Image (cartoon, rainbow, N blue to C red; front, side, top):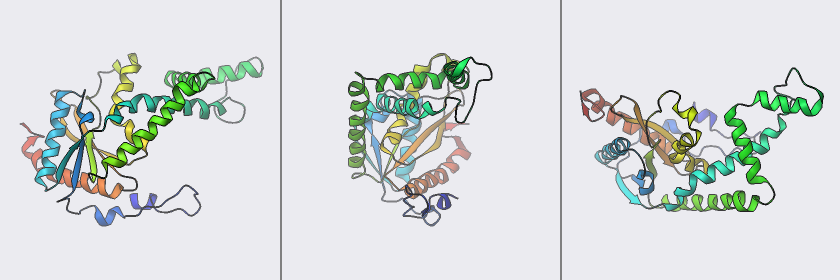
Length: 263
């Protein structure tokens, strides 16, 4: 299925086409591959998450992979860069949903201006409105250079950091989220804390890289812990093969223990 959707589409000007078929490489041996660990990904995460990720690293070592540790300080800026750029794009792109041309339209209104206000107030949820407001702010006159332009410059720095990292390793292993799931209702009450949970995943969005999330353990409450494998551009086959190798190796351990915790 992945090979089908990643094939070259001659009618799509943005299509590149996959260079490697995952079906042919999904069961390849990963012995000799280099697994990169950026130290910054392990900072500020919960201890049980860090322990689960480190246990996953040991699984790769047992399969013959080489672990390479390195510093990538640029990813510390990924979260603010992502939310500035993403909110700016949301503000710009969602401006078309005004109830005139397409999409939701308010039923009761007085005049065109009131219709657009009611349509956007009723049609967008709280999180969408929050992002539109933030995006409009960073794109406004007087703040564009201070926020949006600087964010784009830092985006280039993050892309460069990943390019340098892949000169040292085949793929990068990192936690997916610095913690396990919130208690019900907690994420809604504190949106800022919710944004902070994206700190491990937004770097790949900024850099335009493929990544796959794989379960690698459980916390004391039985909630799953995830790790992500990040690959270079158009190297989805490599990270899917590495994820498959890990799951095969860990499955036997899972039968005997609960990912390292004796049953």
